[in-house]
Amino acid sequence: MQLFAVDMALVRRYLDSPVLTGTDAARLLELHGISDGTPVFLDDETMMPVEPLCAWGRSMSYADLAEGTMKDYGRIMARFDAHQATRDREVLMATEADLVAYKKSRTQLQEKPIGSSAWSKESSVLDQFFAFAVEQNYLRRRPVRVVSRGRNALSSRTRRGMDIRHLSLEQYRYFRDVGLGGQGPDSRLNRSYRGCSPHRDRAGADLAVCSGMRWQEWATVLLPELGIGVDCPGDEADFTVQACAKYGKARGVFVPEQAVRAVETYCLLERPEFTAASARRLESRHRELFVVSRVEPETGRVHGTLDGVRQVFVMQAMPPKLRRITVWEGEFGLEAMAVFLGRGGLMPGADSWKRYRHAAWRRMVALADETTPRLPAKRWRWHDLRHIVSA
Image (cartoon, rainbow, N blue to C red; front, top):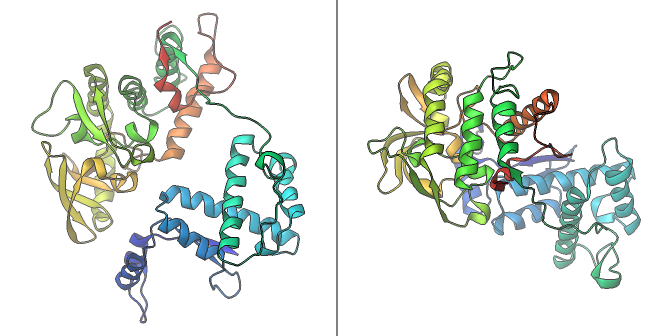
């Protein structure tokens, strides 16, 4: 079985068939309420849809799950299908023994067993799928028996609480300046540093700490939201996050002057290098991008062209995927409107920020000495920057 995910932009751009054009195919997807990220399962030989997996994928789209969530769930079911193939069984033929064997293979037998948190997610997805199969009459009953207290064989036996860790101010400074900023423990420049964007990474850390934003909120922030590059800049910034916020719940964000200044330093010293290097590439891809022609700071609206159509968006309602392809005319030509840029000239993704954080942790551990504040056993996460204590 092969797994794919719906992407209407790719369909419009690349589907070229005498039977159905890309625009027509995208219109059909919209007509049937199929969102980007919806998993599509196809048979290896016939390339026909595999049911009820495709029907289950459609049900997630109708439930309006996030694009990333649907992709993750699709990968989990594809992994379980591959496990079933090794046992000469299909997904709907799964027995309790199959599921218990799958749990052991994932949590004990594979080269890098997953932890209780990751398994809880997988077991929940499997449970949801088989509940759907029973509800839609593909199965008479679920393959796993429910035992005492509503537990089943797939449940994780680890009771998890809230995983909150606090950083002291000294720990944060060490993380920001040594790990991300390339300094040594004595605050001097460390010439062994091989990173390329210390000001960007430090600015991201300051923005996270000073505003209390979650990773997806500060990593996807746009320049006009901080008052940078518009006609009415200010010492502080105050805007609303919604599409990038947890559960899509709107809330106000205040960014103090110190964090805005850190971002401005990055925009002055490092960001032009990224924009100059990528301007020609972005110009050649302008049909794939949302090219902004006008920004209204007072209303938060941006006007531009996407897929050849004039569009108007409210910034707080722009999801990360749209923000990543949002560009405007800059000093060197087209440049991304996102604050933080990677080598390609567009917003870095989750894997890139994870790589920056892991590299910072390795530096912190390697340079630790008697002056270093106590480091935890597990590397810090970006989310931990929301929990800074002064003592």
